[in-house]
Length: 577
Image (tube, rainbow, N blue to C red; front, side):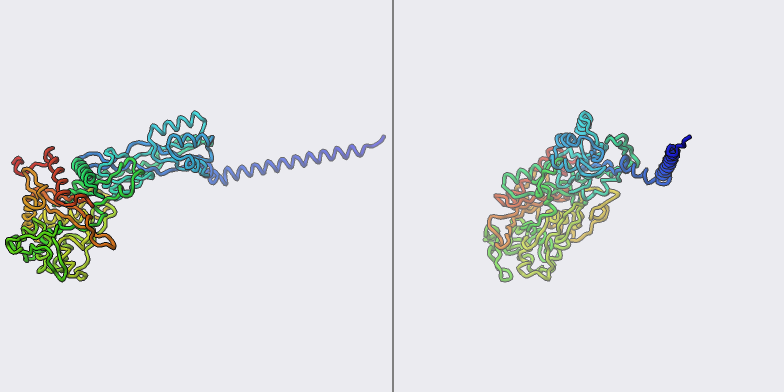
């Protein structure tokens, strides 16, 4: 018989290959098992963390921001429910359709939306403040189109129900929930509260399956203002109408309680819609009462006169120079219109008449014996040349140089409001010192909150007396004469006495000096004259015509008369005992 060695060899070779295959499979299975052990046990937490990074995330969301109210509870700013929209670009579907929907519904440029949609990230904000109706339409359209990847989260959106009213005081909030202007910026820490933490679970198909609040955060504190919305509206309407009719470059009107520093109104002709602040200009957003510096002109005769009265160098009946074109310190001083007064008395007029008729040569004569040091010191004591500390951002300091830098001409011109730069709020506070009997108050527009962020002191801090009360009382009496039969006759009101002072300050232009035809028109006053409860200031920049008594005083008159007619201010003689 023949042997078949080749067949035997083949059989043995097959068995060898089978053993090799079995060994390979065993090792492969062992390797897989080891890998599974490594992934599921040894590296479990790292892989779980990676998976969670794709499907789960925690997001900080702004809480409900504190509301802002006027002094009577009128709502000026509050939060309403809204939706924040983000996108997961790694798990989204149909990005072109998503871009189209977002562009159409949000009104954003297509290129800007596309850049956000295609940004390589598991989470990219599209819009943080979408109203509920719009967000619902976006969600429904995306679902109908099978376009997934959008993330919808509950949030809050700021609303300003009064629109433009007090816009330069209230300010606004940006897309990220930060206060950007006015009180919204100044008191941002108090208003914004503490953010909430939201846990979001999203599937690999791009759909959001769950969002839950991990930490509810803390709502912001409400802010209650000293502003009276009704008076604010009257002032805004009056000052805007006056600026328009007189072609003024700008205008402001301020009202304050002289005893506490509470601002009752802070109005200007330039305003903007807080609900559409993105369409506003820098000039509209600027609060001119605290940022614009101007020379006060003849209204500053009250400050110079107060200084002279307190020093005892004049009394209401002191005779002073009424002639135009008189030289002081080698320089000629002119009166408005180059008019001379007191022709029948050898050009001598009383100090009372100087204030009533706003005579430049007379006030310069009154302060000559006073000297520049004491005059500058009074101006400093009344707060000129430094910020008032009002709780609004952006306040400027004004200009008041040290007396050591003054010349005799500076002393002369400063007495009638030249060579000194003030802001509206500084000038209002200076008038308040006269009104309240010599106390320097700190102006403010918001009542204290727990997380106070303003630069002012607490409203309860006692004001500091800086001027003799007797001098203030005399100046109030003189200012009553200004309205009764002087340059402020257009401010006369029925049944209530008014103490005021007009100002018509010629403006200086760089490289040209004082220019004819460019003036700042002013009127400051307080009512009632005997025991002032409200102090007013009206300022118009380059109005035509430009007389403070003929342009600025009527604005006060119209506002105060309307305030009285609507029963908000009752003259002392008509009040119930």
